[in-house]
Image 1: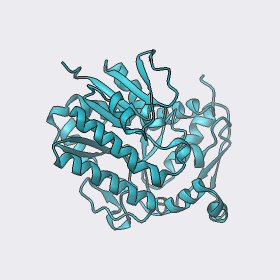
Image 2: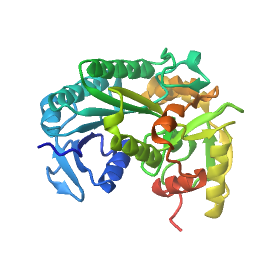
Image 3: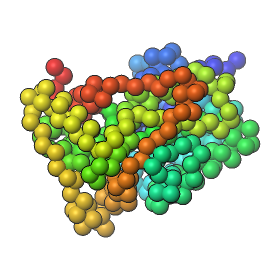
Image 4: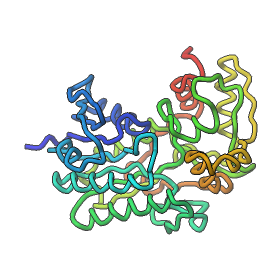
Length: 321
């Protein structure tokens, strides 16, 4: 008999994947994780399996008897993201099909273009303006096709991630520098433009709550998180300043150097992607969580100051008091 709470996490060493793994372990799930050069043994409360998300056979073998597969994986170092991300997803879909498993995808706002702004609902039109966004739409279409064939899918879309392990995020790559005191905060937003943030532990807790009621989900279930809505783009900077001040650090807020990104983008993949995403900082984008509230009755929400403090400690910017 299948273990009803056996889950495979692809991308368990990443920001969102590791957060989901920790939460599901606390909820007494039997958590398995696939990664290259894993010891192939139980380590702590998680079973690590040696394998590569690009290898269909290894993914299928790792997913054996799993009821849920969390697809939170990205190519190593995000290299060749555009070429590798869809093959990775197809391997997950194939493994899920073999095991009659529900696929969980942490979603983003990249699927949407300015025609859907400022308030994003689950059924808002998806006409992305970036390559990354177009691939995100393709990913969701492949998952929708899986659901049409009898599969089950859960997508939770959220704003810009931040959290103690969110190393690959705007917060940790733009606003502050991990491992350094937060003396300078670089805000990439246009003055007055609201911005949507998502604290990773809250995202993981929301996914866990949805999975606890997965029998009641529609076959292709999409939800939006409200997360932390910064109405004019200044609240996040003020929260970082406040936490820094409590740690005895005077932090200044400066404008993010977009001119430098534009100058260097042709020579650097990460900077090229940052330039592509500038439109998300130039206008208010808010996510409507009415559907999530209707289903769950609430949305897990850590107060902003507490979330920012935990994030800065986790990123090595301030010490644990």
